[in-house]
Image 1 (cartoon, rainbow, N blue to C red):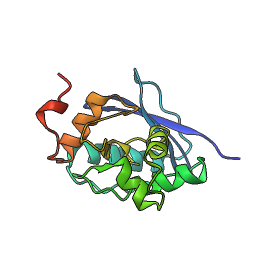
Image 2 (image 1 turned 30 degrees about the vertical axis):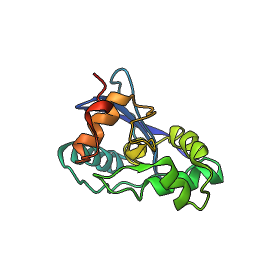
Image 3 (image 1 turned 60 degrees about the vertical axis):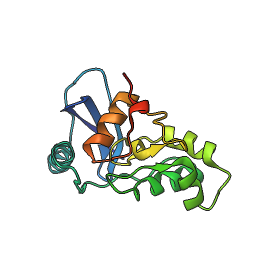
Image 4 (image 1 turned 135 degrees about the horizontal axis):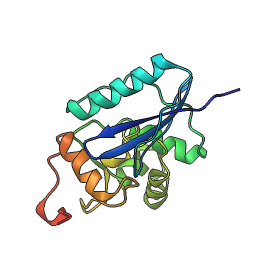
Length: 164
């Protein structure tokens, strides 16, 4: 039986809820408020908390906790795997990812799969932008996407993409 554990983390851009099993993180998302943690694996909980702290305090942090096996379609899993290959400080377009996975006409489907990513930050879907360089779609809200890209040192944000 797989036990579901969860923890909350107060980040500089809001509360985060992480769900995980012995296999790794299965969900990471922004939530409205903090809650109580539940774990049967204090070591893994500490590793995930250290990863979150490291990510938010270092520009090019390298995560140490695993991601649990994905539960998406074969196509989604290809897209999510390619997201993990985008270096911090860079952004790829949906078309870039479609080409990378060998389906050059699937940019819109890549966008849909990107939006279904269950493990924000750890599988960095925030590093994907529109073909015109615009910030588009992010489950954690666009203002957070802008913050995350700036935090990671992405220099491609221009004034017309500003949210305000």
